[in-house]
Length: 337
Image (cartoon, rainbow, N blue to C red):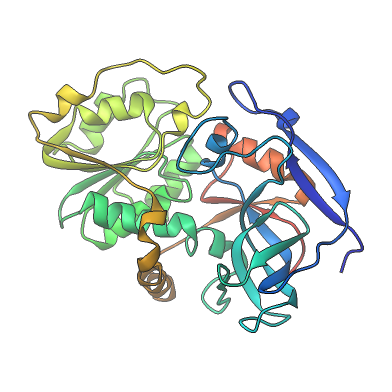
């Protein structure tokens, strides 16, 4: 064990896009777990777009951070001290913990990690919150049918890349939007998407959709919002379903963005728009876990993690989400396995 514990704190609320000024690195004592808790040596931590909302002093589905709070999110690591009969030292677990070398987790809320299926980083991605979000968001909110055309924005990210593959496994035609040629090639060449659009090099999203989805759009899984969503809404088929998972294009907006009014576009196709939060499915998490593990084990579901080395670089990894640095899930390696 290290003799001290390095930890990231929330230093100030950002105006617009966050900068490194919002983060403070401190060094202190390794915490002691209390009854029912685990002291975990963090191997990897997760950075996720929803964390931008926690930086605002406003009510949201995720409780805002107070200035001075320890930054927290998904972590996976090894138990070094257990005050619970559920786990013992040496077990690998995942849960919600500090951006730190060592995190204290509630044993009742931690989950065991099976490294025989996939490595530790995957349990923060395809086998963690993003994978479950993709599973329930597409299958419940999107309700895909065989031969449907499914369009995914943010398709090369942690959620979108899984959404597209599950859609393909359900017999759908899949089109993804992503932000580089490397990403679009990954989607089509490795993940089996039927078409992919580089939104950074495409001037006319509507024309690109006409080519990629000539039959229109039956299901739209929206991680992004903005002009991509404006274009997709004009292509919705009769009884189309829209699953709204994220709006990363607007997370750094300080005012209310204006643009095309989308509600009239839903009338003729009688489309359904549904927001989703993965926490609503907590009683069904094991269902998703089993299906996702099964697809991975069968070689039917690919996953990829972009690993940023070093706890000291965790803020850079988070900020990189907004410039599209990652392919698949963005994680930080805190310590060697």
